[in-house]
Amino acid sequence: QKEVEQNSGPLSVPEGAIASLNCTYSDRGSQSFFWYRQYSGKSPELIMFIYSNGDKEDGRFTAQLNKASQYVSLLIRDSQPSDSATYLCAVNTNAGKSTFGDGTTLTVKP
Amino acid sequence: EAGVVQSPRYKIIEKKQPVAFWCNPISGHNTLYWYLQNLGQGPELLIRYENEEAVDDSQLPKDRFSAERLKGVDSTLKIQPAELGDSAVYLCASSLEGGGSYNEQFFGPGTRLTVL
Image 1 (tube, rainbow over the protein chains, first blue to last red):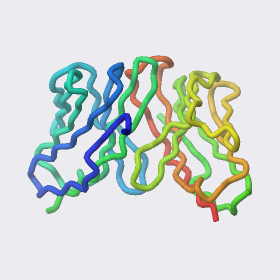
Image 2 (tube, rainbow over the protein chains, first blue to last red):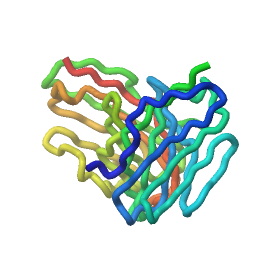
Image 3 (spheres, helix red, strand yellow):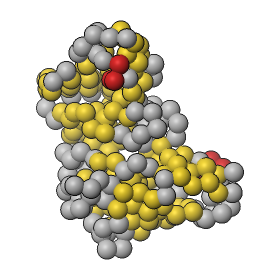
């Protein structure tokens, strides 16, 4: 079992819909959680981070964290074709160790 | 502010040849990471530096891979000898503070290595 698991996808949604991306992790010592977006042939770039249980909203993006269930998700509202990319979940422990999932590829169809 | 710089961007070598990658992190970033990313997979950590100290190199295949960050700024990752399975994208990233878990990582453009 991988330390960080993501839905393998691909996930396809129509333009304007909500895209839901999920991530589970195994290390209960994990402290911080990051969502990175990676366009094809490019390097990852940060979308959002979350440290506390609950929801965190930033524009069209909402990150949700449930430490008891070891689950973190990313919701993208009003999805746009430009959101089409691979979304990587990264989990950091308090020792600074960072582990990435294999990503979920999202396609937003016009 | 300049981002993370990596060179070369692309490298094609024959198996058993040596290869080296260079990374210059964002100014003031104490933590530097080297990752390997295969197609369809997430980045896998090879080594993490806090300043000039390698604090996590547990995933670095030390029989053929080596890395250094002598002055705590730029870093070099070397493979000698390269194998076919080393073909991948090698990503360098940096973050602001050492030791903490709350810092986002900034990635360089990566070096795409092809071993023939």
